[in-house]
Amino acid sequence: MADKSDKKEKGTKGGRGVKKAGKSVSKSSKAGLQFPVGRIASLLKKGRYASRIGAGAPVYLGAVLEYMCAEILELAGNAARDNKKTRIIPRHIQLAIRNDEELNKLLSNVTIASGGVLPNIHNVLLPKKSEKKESAGKSQEV
Image 1 (cartoon, rainbow, N blue to C red):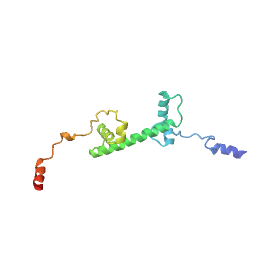
Image 2 (cartoon, rainbow, N blue to C red):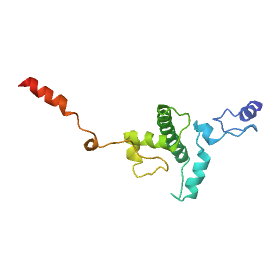
Image 3 (cartoon, rainbow, N blue to C red):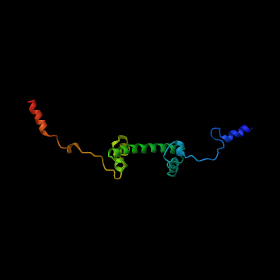
Image 4 (cartoon, rainbow, N blue to C red):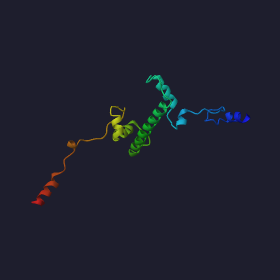
């Protein structure tokens, strides 16, 4: 009978036995995320999006948000490097989003403060090619 009580103290039964007092582990670290899973859970409950919120919902939402931020920050970092800057500014975020097809579609109705616009000159406004080259080509054909 002493063996059974030892097993309970060790907690070998699926991790549900008597646990020793130790450091608490956050839900974010259990899920392997940087975004705060506990805070997302409380915000989902507080927002009254549904009467009940499952345990996996804030983890999934946190993972999606973390991926989106990582994607945008990577593209914005590339835009900053292209402009020979070390810091990301709103302009770099704007360039990153508008140059990516899927992010542009997702954030099409979003205005980024101090983001500016994509550099674009309509073809009609560009100067026409010089006619000297065209007239020289025609004289050779005749």
